[in-house]
Amino acid sequence: MHEPLLDVQDLSVSFTVDGKVTKAVRGVSFYINKGETLSLVGESGSGKSVSALSIMRLLPAPQAHHPSGRITFQDQDLIAAPEQIMRGIRGKKISMVFQEPMNSLNPLHAIERQVSEILQIHQGMGTLDARKRTVELLEKVGLDEPEKRLGAYPHQLSGGQRQRVMIAIALANKPDLLIADEPTTALDVTVQAQILNLLKDLQAELGMAVLLITHDLAVVRKMADRVCVMTQGRIVERGDTEEVFQAPKHAYTQHLIAAEPKGEPPPGDPQAPVVMSTSHMRVWFPIKKGVLRRTVDHVKAVDDVSFDLRAGETIGIVGESGSGKTTLGLALLRLISSRGHIAFDNQDIENFKTKDMRPLRREMQIVFQDPFGSLSPRLPVGDIVMEGLGLYGKAPTGPERRRLIGAVLEEVGLISDMQDRYPHEFSGGQRQRIAIARALILKPKFIMLDEPTSALDMSVQAQIVDLLRGLQQRHHLAYLFISHDLKVVRAMANYVLVMKAGKVVEQGSANNIFDHPKTDYTRALMAAAFDLETANYEN
Image 1 (tube, rainbow, N blue to C red):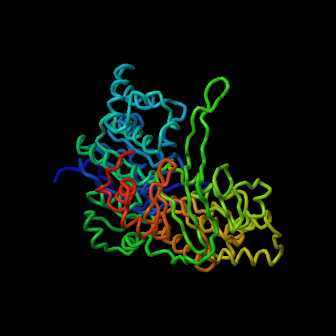
Image 2 (image 1 turned 30 degrees about the horizontal axis):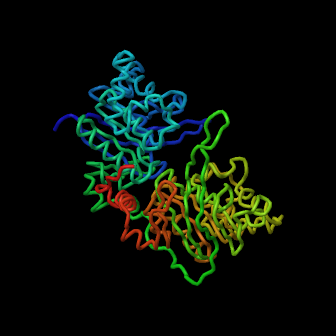
Image 3 (image 1 turned 45 degrees about the vertical axis):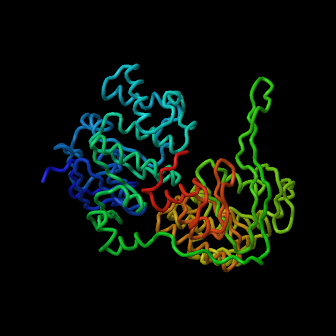
């Protein structure tokens, strides 16, 4: 047997903060051979990314340290290697693609500078040679019109385009090992499929090894030759990918595989009252040019959308980023201007001003994608949950206040006593339950759920889906469920609208949309979500 390209033995990682030691990785061992893909899979906090960052020596010092372990790469012990040696390895022999390219790319530098910089540092290229090679790399990773993109800044690119730039940077020096840390989590399903196919093609062309860090089992099954399952800093199961998926031995692996959102939404009642409706809605943003700033065209973010949403029913809005999903939801809530008819609870509200909408706000609520960003870090949970009642009604005080907060926390699966704690003391799933409790305490009729599960692990997604369905049945809630995750939408929605470039390209019952899609675009979304091998739709 050949020596592995990378050999990690008995790796432990601890963090010391304010004298308190946290053991993040405990005695982990794995290896990667040249040209193969190994996946470290597990939920948030399992130690996957910490293990990967240890290979690159990117953990913060002196807080992070290694009580035990050895990481051998091409006969070099990386833990003991001087920083000068590591500088020659990072970006040249070992490269990394991170989860969120917007956070990884420099917002102040154009794309050309960011790609060419690594060529100039490691290969000593001059400006002209680096520019030529940058165009070749951008073309290789499938970025359209690469020469025209050289002067673009990260904010001027889509999420998929930014991730392609990150891959170009990572592959610039033809590394022997590519570490991909959740490289597709923030991307739409069709873009995810394109990026994964790109990585496989480039891996075959360059003969590099890939260490894939992810919690998405569909990605693991498509990409990995072998898999190591991690939880609580330990590897609890390892083996060939198909072997692990077909016959998982450890209870945690079985739990992960079974955790995908399942089941169906509560059946809709065609006789239930219409809670929210719109017809021929338009949200057009003007494009102005010239000294006089005359309108020369419009960005048609939402263009001629119509539907009725009944009590106890969920309408799923699906489509790629930029399709108009969230803009549609914000317009329904009268948070942005729009044209077309909008009715809420038998009231025409399309012309309502801010003061007219205020009495209705209590009955129209939102749950956002990122619960940590939508909860104030300065307020205890009790104050966060009760805040809406103070704004839209008379908030109780004293024992009645605690009783009411405790009751709604328990309804969303938390403990009453948690109302005295702060958001940073909770997991992502618990924070999303707090956000749901904040909406629920107002007894709304309509809730807009904007990507409420996309920032969560698979098993937590399933729990939140079950919670939302249960609350809907008990309170007869109407949901507008916005998501690019079609597996979650299938478990939640009675009716589905498929949006592309502001228009509804297809709409109908969830069963018809998922089982008998009519348009090429919808079929591409379904292929990307449920069968990654067949997804080849290009924007």
